[in-house]
Length: 174
Image (cartoon, rainbow, N blue to C red; front, side, top):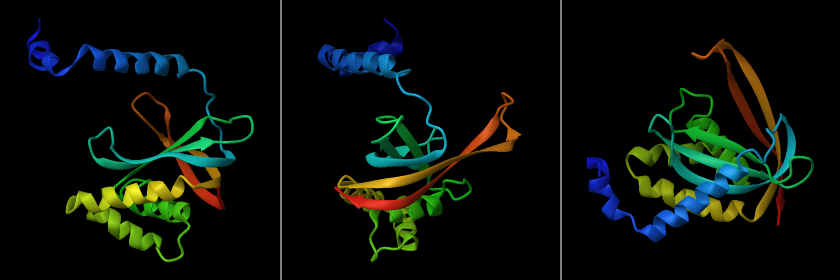
């Protein structure tokens, strides 16, 4: 048994591992089931709104939009917004999108940006806000304009950087 296995395997029950393996197998089967969603306007629901971590280890907000009608029904559009406004989907862009999703005339995108900006000082405020926001958006559906642009700059593999924009056009109850 490896050192790593010895150290951590005692924390994993066979039942837990079996359940996770089943979920992973299902995920593998579904991996190619969905088509890539092209730019367009889609009727969507928010399937998931949560605080996560970027591939760099920084906090980010993940929003999964589930398409509810048309050719791409049941496919997902993913939004990941960081807490760093050096990126297109930084804290300000995320606050604008959240304000549009919440459709609350009494809470501006600037106020949401301030709430999100408190993450370094008080993660509880951000977690509570996102939990409350998640409950609200579960009751709504949206027309989402999803666009894709390609940068002239390329990554190390020679592929252009892809930028997505997200705009809520309409909000519907129920």
